[in-house]
Image 1 (cartoon, rainbow, N blue to C red):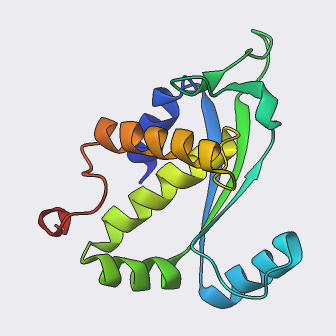
Image 2 (image 1 turned 60 degrees about the vertical axis):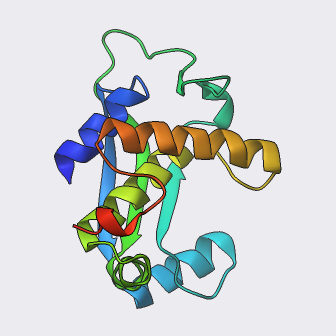
Length: 150
């Protein structure tokens, strides 16, 4: 997964940046979702960005608007938390492997770290286009097809 995450970061021009990635079970995810989003249920992936939405250009290909100082240590984009339990259920529903589902969640989470959202139709369309682009960059069919289950 580390190589996939590195590739995704490179695709949004954040190849020198890092992301904290945690895998948890549903009870821990439910608690995180309750505390941070007010939703008392587990979810598949949570993103905790370090930079505001405005720090990224969403006009086409996602990329940072500005970089840190050259002497800055590694840039931390934020934290991603993935529920393994929810990912397993979703993978089964999509007839996909757990690995493929986690890759899909990493794509989604990285884009949230880069300021994307899917609440409004126009935002959703931009984010979906970027999801497809990032999926293509790692050789992942989008949306899932039965032939991609391997």
